[in-house]
Every structure is written in structure tokens, then in C-alpha cells.
Length: 108
Image 1 (cartoon, rainbow, N blue to C red):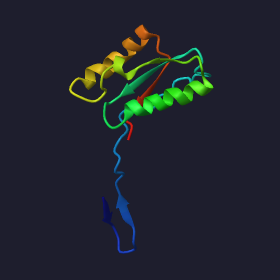
Image 2 (image 1 turned 180 degrees about the horizontal axis):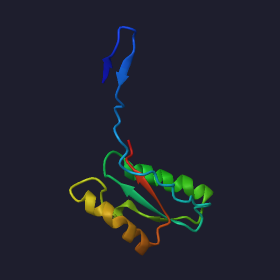
Image 3 (image 1 turned 90 degrees about the vertical axis):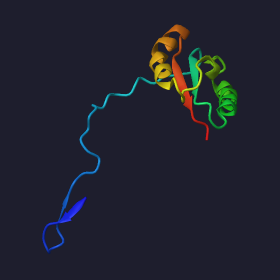
Image 4 (image 1 turned 60 degrees about the vertical axis):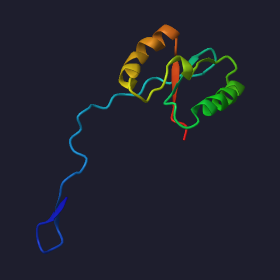
């Protein structure tokens, strides 16, 4: 919100975003290849994610023929009544399944 302070066109300004509450963390190290890696598929079960993942698998396999997939069917929907619990369980599930990377799809 801006409030006029003088007749000379000067205004007081308040930053609308507010104070930062979380520190910025560095990004995870990127994989150098997908060959020999296991990639998890996460989907919210809306729109056409099943079709998007099928197309992604096909295209990615052209460049990385040794990539392994953990299907979205393994995890259930990432949007719904139990989404908080599902998302909290992902680090452990990824460890159990040997997942190296994940693709989260909204498929619009």
C-alpha cells in the first residue's frame, strides 16, 4: 500500500511480500546421466498424467536406454485426503526403492 507523504509526488512504500521466513538452501546435485538410474513418477491423478508419463518414458529411453522407472501407480495420488502423509513418506519410500530422481507431473 502506498501513502502520499508530500505534495511533490513522493510516496511511502511497504513491501507486499513480507519478511522471508525460510532460508534459501542450495539445490541438490544434478545427475550427470539417467542411464542406470531409477526415476520415480509422481502424479496427482488429475488431467492426463498417465499419458504424459508414457510419452516421457518413450522419449527419455531414446537418449537413456538403461533408465529404470518406478511407476506413479506405486505411490498413489499426490493430491487428496492423505497427500500430507504420502509426501512425508517419500524420502523413505525412495530409499527403499533405490530412487535416484523423481518427476512430479500435474499434466495439464
